[in-house]
Image (cartoon, rainbow, N blue to C red):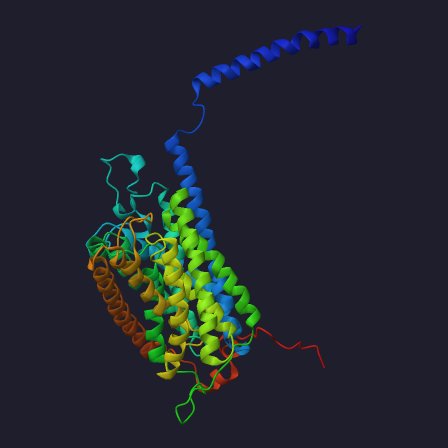
Amino acid sequence: MKTKIAGTCVRWATPVLLALTLSGTLFAQDAEPAGPSPEELKVMLDTLWVMITAFLVFWMNAGFGCVEAGLCRAKNATNILGKNFVVFAFSTIAYWIVGFAIMFGDGSSFMGMSGWMLGGADNSPAMGDAYQGVFGSLNWTGVPLLAKFFFQLVFAGTAATIVSGCVAERIHYKSFIIFTLILVGLSYPITGHWIWGGGWLGSMGFSDFAGSTVVHAVGGWAGLAGILLLGPRRGKYRADGSMQPIPGHSMALVFLGGLILWLGWFGFNPGSTMAADPTGIAHVAMTTNLACCAAILSSTITAWLMLGKPDFSMTVNGALAGLVAITAPCYFVTVGASAIIGFVAGIIVVFAVLFFDKIKIDDPVGALSVHLANGIWGTIAVGLFASAAAPGGKDGLLSGGGFELLQTQLIGTLAVGAFTLTLALAAWFLIKMTLGIRVSPEDESRGLDISEMGMEAYGADPMHK
């Protein structure tokens, strides 16, 4: 009987509860919005895109570590990996405290002077036209301030990582860390402000979409200053002045690192749209990849002709050279022009490696040839190849736009180079006079893994007899 009554109650209760549920849902739909507005949805998608691409750029630290370690000797591998691991941490601290404010905070045409430690609100379009924050140079993108900061942070860390390869195999670990703080906290943000932060070069029309100059050439100039004060590695140049090759210990690491960096560049360049813009993203991804592939082709052929063999290290550095060169013009040039830019970059990197060796500038991994030489080339290429047919919408010299843009690109290249090299030389000299920058000859011979790190990357088994 109880079962029968219960079943009857359930049969009657079910439609009643269903009706109440549906009516509640209907009332809820009347009271609440159906979903995010188009403006809110755009911010959500833009933020997702910016953060995913920033994560890809962060992963480039692994690529730099592998390439640099592979192109250096086994006895220094842990030291190089250690530098590439900690550099992002120290870059984060320096950029958070002062770097981001100097680069993007409101201030003068020389540097930002507000927003220290991210203190101060953003000039987000969502706040309304009348609202005034302290990061006016970034109000063109509506993603949250912390997303803007993180995306710009991974670029700052990349500039510092470039220096690591230039000074490899002979620098004190602590001295590199101190220089990183100076570079990311002061030098990189000042020149970055000139171009991306509302400074004087940006006002002139200087164009660098994703950082051929802002990131790569700056890292190259800073690394060159370090090389000049450090001098070459022991044994690199013979008594008669001829060059003694010092081969790297693992081309497998170089292979892996090169592919990681190639992948990361699809965050570096397309992510610089800082918006989920289908046309812009697709265009930049295509120009980036094509320039890389064209540079692989030309660097391999050039090395084969110059050296008699298709030097694989030149092939990988050729790929990176093409990526560096297209970083500034990727948004401003046509797809066809990107292939030309990349092809020239691959030739430049081979001749630059040979040139730096000839003048006894000891760059163990070819960072100057990749980042400095081709950062300059990519910046100048904007003035030559920019086309109104590309999303950037401006014409360079070869597209009928006259000499004006090229002249601006040349002025910016010279100004950033002169400032960065001067400040970096001063910083390295100050560190040299206080902490010292070069390890002793004995420690260099033993390897920095033992002398600086106290451990080896490929240590022998102590239990093995």
